[in-house]
Image 1 (cartoon, one colour):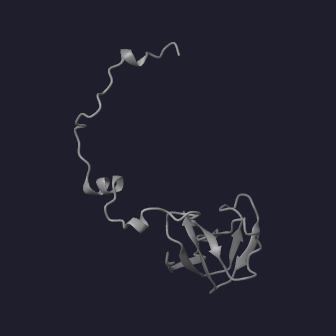
Image 2 (cartoon, one colour):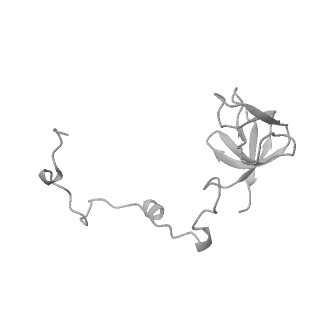
Image 3 (cartoon, one colour):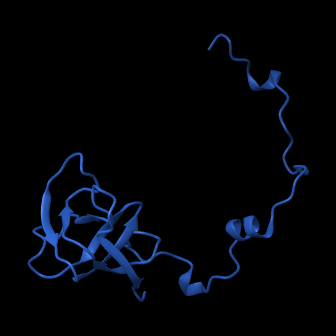
Length: 133
């Protein structure tokens, strides 16, 4: 643009100089983890999330949807009180990976989502435990 000065007219910071601050041990661990075993260092191919898969118990009738929203899409099934499902948590929703047979009508390539809470804020799914890797 006509108002932009080329870089040679602006002073640029030199690389490899002291930035004037230090990182905390927690910040350094995020940059270069030292506590992971070699086998834990990467995600499994095809894994839906870097978070753990978990088991949930259905607390109340819970509709299952194709998308993690109530604004569009449709209900593709429902879960009944006391049933156990597995999935990955994404915010207020769980992407289901297994559910009782006959409860959800989706193809293998389709997604199945259930909200952790109903529209009134009441719990629909209760976390039980992480699934083994």
